[in-house]
Amino acid sequence: MIVSISWRNVWRNKLRSFVIIMAITVGLVGGVFTVAVYNGMSEQKLRTAIDTQTAHLQIHARGFQKNKDIRLYIKQPENILSAIQEQQDVEGVATRLIATGMAATSTSNAGVQLNGIIPEQERRVSTIYQFVREGDYFESGKKNQILISSKTAKKLKLKLRSKVIITLQDINGQIVGAAFRVGGIFKTTHSLFDEGNVFVKKQDLERVLGAGSTINEIALRMKSIGQVEKLLQNFESKFDDQELDIQSWREIQPELAYINDATWQINFLILIIILLALAFGILNTMLMAIFERVKEIGVLMAVGMNRFKIFTMIVLETVFLSLTGAFVGLGVSALLVRKTNSSGINLSRFTEGLESWGLGNVIYPQLEAHFYLNIAAMVVVTALLSSIYPALKALKLNPVDAIHG
Amino acid sequence: MSIIKLINIDKTYNPDTIPVHALSDLNLEFKQGEFTAIVGPSGCGKTTLLNIIGGLDQPTSGKVIIDGTDLSTLDRGQLIDFRLQNIGFVFQDYSLLPVLTARENTEFIMQLQKQPKKKIKERVVTLLREVGLEDKLNVYPTKLSGGQQQRVAVARALASKPKFVLADEPTANLDSHSTSDLLDIMLKLNREENITFIFSTHDQRVIDKARRIIMLEDGKIAKPELVKQEVI
Image (cartoon, rainbow over all chains, first blue to last red; front, side, top):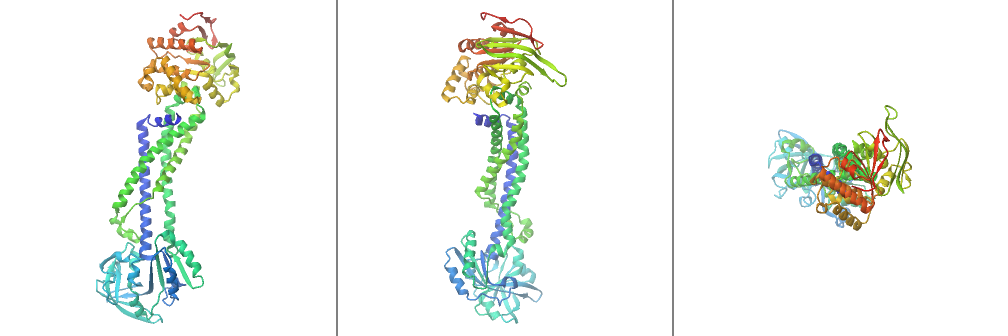
């Protein structure tokens, strides 16, 4: 009966209940959607970085990441590659030769990182080929083709089939130069990455450097991001005796890992702030409800309803009111997130800012199902906390004073 | 045998500021099955007396003993439980829960007593039939007339099988027809179930039907009590 009374009490003053339910709805929709957008951005940034830059795991000769010295190459890479072949969880592996140099045209020059790749391997590890806007991804089969970003093309005033001179140090430390022809122009969603990286075929770079078959980076893509740490530990112990740096995407881009880890904390903070504001609204509504029913509560005490039951009745009423708002709010939020997740939110007006952050101009808000349950639980906790003061206020009523006003 | 004993009851409001003596040195006893009206002008202490008998208010001094239990020995929680088990209340403005139907309002007290569902169902139907509302079981108070609401209130007060019922001006908001109906119902229940009824009232129609009349004036019994042999 207490449950029934509490539920029906919610609907006694329909306008007041409607107002607070709407407040909860609007608050939750705002909060949940903000969180979903932030999640979408965070996920997109992480995915783009892994897809185009870091892969899931990278293996280098010790010290290479710091110095980018091509003489620090991986010794006996075939042992490592055969160990990788045995791993069921690895989706793709790419061997790379990386060097830094200067790209120059008749009008301008720029410092770049030359990524010597094997395109067939690379397609299973990186999605750079999907970002090619002009030309192709080394599909012509010609020698000394170079894939540059549209940003670099603009800076060096290059077009498709333009010639660019690359100057760099060879394996013996001698300065060497080579002419490459622009075979493709790409544009990812990360302008800083685009600015600093060009791609050439590994065999072309090896020829220029006089390096023979040299590998100074092995990049791995796993079937799932959750398998990275396990494989990392496995390889660290397996290749402990070799001079290698084996790093997951977390170590390669720690700021990315931080953003990923901090996402749930930021989400939690956003929701806490919104629920805190809602708590005062709920508290106010329940106080009004109690003051309106002072006489009725006095009568209930007089006829024998004990303090625990009165307390329970008010707490339940608050929870029902809040959960109704949560139900509506989360329902609307889920629909909104679902809709925008499939259509995306076009923020092309802010392209420049977003790209400097490694984001595309279309954001896809997203939330996992358990998040909605967590919010519902947080609303219940908020309702419980908000109900305590009005319930205690009711318990302090003296039946005689309450009945006779 | 007395079921209610009031011994040297004093009640003073605002004792530390401007004292108002509501009841002074009052000694009263009520026996099982009485149908008693407490009458007197406004402010004479009728409602205060009922509140003290009902354990809703404490006397400044004196003792209230109900069926051997001294109410002053009970804490707040025990008093609530004591009222639930022993006392029925009827209020001037009916005070039904608007979110419950006539049937639910009546069975509410029995549910608080944790009585078996079957027993609750049977008694509620019986009581609402006795007060003439068997066709209004599932009707909400707002859809009932004042007289009908007060009849539900009487059924609610009796549902828990209390030792006595305290009714504070129960007919004050009723027309003469509804008052007559209500009094007939209460008298019938008083006779058939031997339940003690104690009213505070101004209403001559209630006074006429009471078997015992206690007149209060300035917190004291003003005249010798009138005890009738038969109800007219």
